[in-house]
Length: 110
Image (tube, helix red, strand yellow):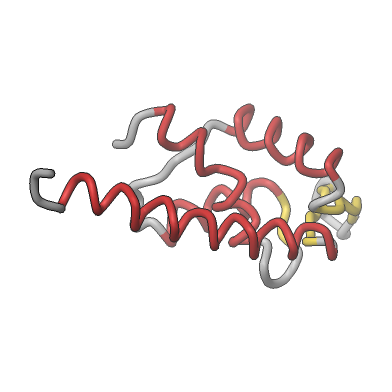
């Protein structure tokens, strides 16, 4: 529904937001993004996992492999302290950006 560029620019914020709660594995993250957006945001697994790996490398999230009987092994991701700081900054930056874009798009002529 939305362009890949728009989604790409906000993906880290969206993932951090979803992980601001219990740990989730990649499939759960994708489904949560889809559910919270009422089906308007869908991400390919390859895109989602590449962002998760990048965020883990930055220290924003931590992955832990979990095995449950009768299920395959999955990596569950959770926010780190650095991730919570990144989330707070990205939320603030996002609000400022949206407010600024609204000034231009919704505002009058200068």
